[in-house]
Length: 501
Image 1 (spheres, one colour):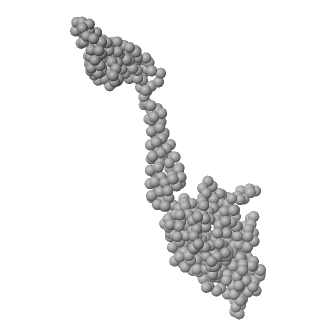
Image 2: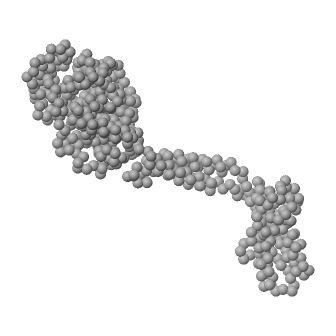
């Protein structure tokens, strides 16, 4: 991402860098251990010049001027053919020429002859043989009566203790450096073309919305029987509820809409975590399953095959018959249901269903996408007081996030912020520096669905009468709204009326 530093990019994509390093070192190791070893042995010759008619200085000057020319003779046929013959090598002159070399160290009369071979003894034999052959050639060529030049083997070649090639440490080091460089390039390339959400700045850049809270990865694991709840996850959902309340002007909304950014973010445990956090505050929370949560890891397995929202839309049951308590919590839950229903039926009865929901609970929470049927964002959004976008760390993309926010705004709802879920436990995200004063409203969102006392005639439909008898009056928790007292006195259907502001 453009707003991230290189260090942050590398930290986020350390796995790609690690894979590249492993591949680089592995390839280098394969090369280093597949190359046959090569041993190098060196023999040192010393140049001696004898001339009774010259001084020591003249002989020294002659030696320094002459010695460098002898190094070129080492690779000549006159030197190498006798070596092949004496040692019985199965090599040609060209092949042996590639295995020997000679240098004259500066300001010396020494000649170092090096020979390479597949074994240490063989390298020493060849180096000594080449040195002897060169010495004989020079003695024969430079013999002029009283003047003679000889090359004496000052230091014989010995079998080396270790191979000179391949240099495994160097090759492995180069493999590591190459893998690290390739990993860094890969991380930058992924950052350029990977548009998945990871940072609060990513969400802000795409939508302008603040990230109100983060939920660690453990929330997706199903709770085992008898296991203690994850305090970290519970604290994260409690923090999310507190920030949602703060962003809503200090009031918990009556109807809260969770809008997942993409299918991978549509996880039932988010809905359950939010209503669980609401229940711990003493409020009566009601979670409504829209029926399209994916990869829920059995979070809603206990409600599979039970009547629920679909039956309420079809007016074939009552709220009391489909409302169930969540195990280990005071929260209530309405499953998606099993009946076949249509979007037209849902649109027709949604108002009355929501009225019954908010009559039964202080806070109604549902998690819906535009792909849900029959309940979806276009249907529920006009009734929701507050909408929060659910972003899954490293899964939700820019396009999915932008599409979800656009769908909410088209439906007439401006989301107050986002919650990032599935954040790695080792990843600490500091949110407070990312907030601005405009992220938190001074007044709560206006209720869009509520109960008012109206002098209306009682409904005569069979289903309405059934609903009245099945839902006895209950005193709702005090939520601070001006219409609470009238709501308590208007539980029966003859006094209920949906008002959409």
